[in-house]
Amino acid sequence: MSATGRDDLDEEAELSDAWVAAEPRTERTPAEDRGREDGPRRRTDRGAASGRRSATTRGAGIDTGGETAPGDRPASGRETESGRGTAPRRGTTPRRDSDSGREDNPRRDTGRGGETNPRGETESDRETGPGRETEAGAREARPLVAASWRRSVRARVSPDGAARVELDEDELAAYREAHPLTAAMPVIRELMGAYATDGEHLLAVCDAAGRMLWVEGHPGTLRKARGMNFVAGARWSEAAVGTNAPGTALAVDRPVQVVAAEHFRRPVRAWTCAAAPVHDPHSGRVLGAVDITGGERLAHPHSLGFVQAVARAAESQLALLGPAPEPGRLRLSALGRDEAVLSVGGRRMRLSRRHSEILVVLAHRPEGVSGDELLTLLYEDESVTPVTLRAELSRLRALLGPDALRSRPYRLAGAVDADFATVDRRLASGAVAAAAGDYAGPLLPASAAPGVVRLRERLAERMRAALVDRGDPGLLADWAYSAWGEDDVVVWRALCAAVPANLLPPVRARLDSLETELCAGATGLQRTGHHTRA
Image 1 (cartoon, rainbow, N blue to C red):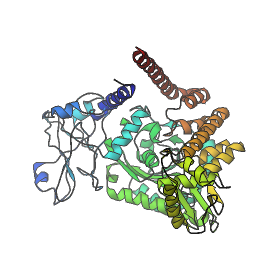
Image 2 (image 1 turned 180 degrees about the vertical axis):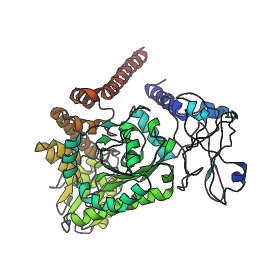
Image 3 (image 1 turned 90 degrees about the vertical axis):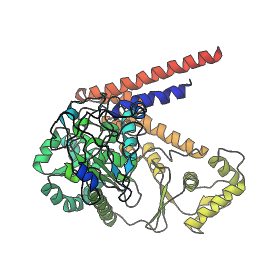
Image 4 (image 1 turned 135 degrees about the horizontal axis):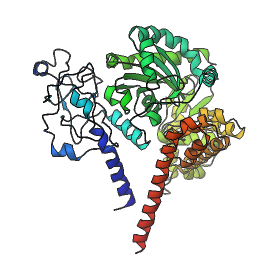
């Protein structure tokens, strides 16, 4: 078997235990089953006596190292079983009501006569531990949640424990003061404050790295949230604590709701949260996220729409307070996204992947490039003809306007503010913290255009080297807990040397895991090479 094949099997095996451990589940009564289209579903007891899971269910799962699979909600956005998440099971497909599009859940008996607690758990649910089989029927996770769990496993997030508090009071105060979302907090509080307090919820605002800047709301709920370090100054990125609404919303750059057992970490499964990212209205760069967190009463699609509306209101406030964009000046955002966003004269447009690559190359080369050189910078395939490139440039000119793109050589007519160029300039001037704040991820990460690949690798290497040289634990942690830095052994080693002793254990554990994998991978490659030579 090839090394790639073994890696795929290892990931499959690593993911499978997570889909079979305990979590709160819900059930319909026969009466509810007959009348499910007439009213809301109610939770009833259910347990472990049915034991009728198929061989397919038992044998075709994904293992997340002893963790429960996240719950399911249908694509329509409606919650199953009174809005609670349900447990995905291996090799199963959901049944749908033909009229409503909602997913049915298999009927199960308790078998023990156990009473359910207010969260719908029976005694058998609470006793089932990680990696242990239950006799409950099959469930399936929402694709968004399942993908988030896979990322959480690849990031080696522990299913237990609390978030890490990285900023003390003084550091937090200084960071808040300089953060652009500070200007939007009056609007966010006006829209969410009373709702959070009256409903015994929390409003939270985090930065683009998932660090909580503000956590406010009902006093009793605040006290409970401290038990899992859902507090200002703590990092709640997906790579740090697994699936959660603010962290996952930042990871996928879209509004996200996470209900109860859909959370990756066990201590968070009593909570439901909804979050939406907030963007810089001029550049499109992600500034952070707004979140509403509380109990199961938030398990409703309206919660997701609510935080999305608050995020849009915050962006509108920032647009009013910020400087007006210079007429005719292009702003190009290409870091951390496969399709660049171009802003010009207050208008924002998402570009195709090929147009994104063309603009990145031309923004990097303001003096212009010849047609032959542009062809080699954009296409791996040497058989691509100049006619193909001219057709792409013609379409781009139609999009930008006849005077924006010039030829002989190909160049942009006006100045361009490109986010990757801003990061490069700040690194050159020694402003590492500012560069790290603007670095939203690799440059067009999915692009294989030779010119883009070179720019992407060079910028990432310069960013990494500057962070390691600076040795700031906060900046190193931002990189290490990001999607692009979670496997960066060099940065994890630097972080291990920089963090205070009380924060060292989880960092050391992550580094040890990475180095073990590296050694195993090197050994596997050596063995493969040996067999090949034989």
